Amino acid sequence: MINDVQSDNCYVGGDGTNEEAVDMLKLSATNAKVALVWSQYMAMAGNATNVIENLRLMKGGATDQERNDVMAEAKFIRAWALFDMVRLYGDLPMVLQIIPTITAENLDMWYPVMYPQRASVEDVYTQIFKDLNEETVSHLPSKNTGAFQATKGAAYGLLAKVYATYKDVGERNYQQVVSYCDKVMAEGYRLVSDFNALWDPDNKFTSESIFEVYYTADSPNWAYWTLLKEDDGSVTWRRYCTPTHDLVAKFLPNDQRYAASIQWKKAPYDAYWSADNYPFSYKIREKNSDIILMRLADIMLLKAEALVELGQSAEAIDIVNEIRSRAGLTGNLLNRTISQSAARLAVENERQLELYMEGQRWYDLVRNNRLLDVMKGHKDKNGNKLFPGLQDYRALWPIPQGELDKNTNLTQNEGY
Image (cartoon, rainbow, N blue to C red; front, side, top):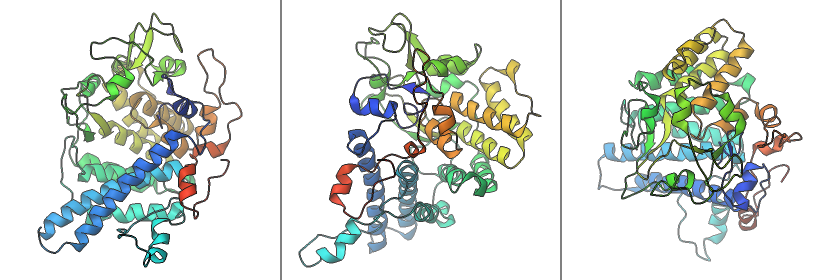
């Protein structure tokens, strides 16, 4: 919803005024989706903080190594939550202590801790880097296949993404992006030979997967039902995340990622396409489908993005061509002598097609100052531009009104 529906990848697809507002870039402070995303990320960061601080207080019951290992995993989770939140909301109120039972006697002391002002974006990134420091990473396990666990590879990948986003484009340390991408690769991850195999529900924790959420038929992933079908394969109501016309048109006829990412079938509605031939997002296929939150192709293309900015466009295009070759596009490889500006667009385009429905597109556009240019050209099903007058404040979400009501120290983002 945040990255694919909000961008030019998907129409919202299903019904719901809160979700439609995400698609139409009409979010408000009272939107329930805005409040839900905020509360869940805050809970994720808060739960991690509780683990970290309680581990500090532990007397016995675990070895130092056990405490350090668990604390490292919790710091990874907190860093992940803060990174997503700072990209969505900007300045954040951070609570990095355990809140005790509140009484009349201690209310004045703890109220500003419970309801703080928004820390600056710079301070949030400082905390992310502190959580993902060398000490943290040293206590994470090393693996070369996917895991539903914080690992060194996942931490290096997260650091690469953080450095690729931190500060404005001209001030970024792209060499650090390359370095952390290389550290991911040095863990031993490898591209699978068949792109479609990544989305086989029974093909879990491949050599390409880095961080993956595990599901079984007994502990199911309901997203297949939201996106694709009923248990019997039928479609009886409007599914979410319908591929846009422009997205579909970008795939070359021999691109194997097309059939692996989008399935066409009849639908009992024609909201965005003909009911006789309707596209459905296809990377989550069954109730036991895992969700891959980070994989090697993403990290490789992130390295390519950084190499372009470092003036090494030929090396960046080599990476893009490796990804394209795996997709069956050996006859459509790119010229490695193209200009830097053309290489930027080549990497951006490859990330869009490779990572469709993996929650990357909006963040990619914002990170590279491409949001207004791309979204002003985004069209509806009839070819009409949807956002010709888009304003740049829409790059951030509003602070939920309920949070402003609870915490008088908070301020609203510009434009909302």
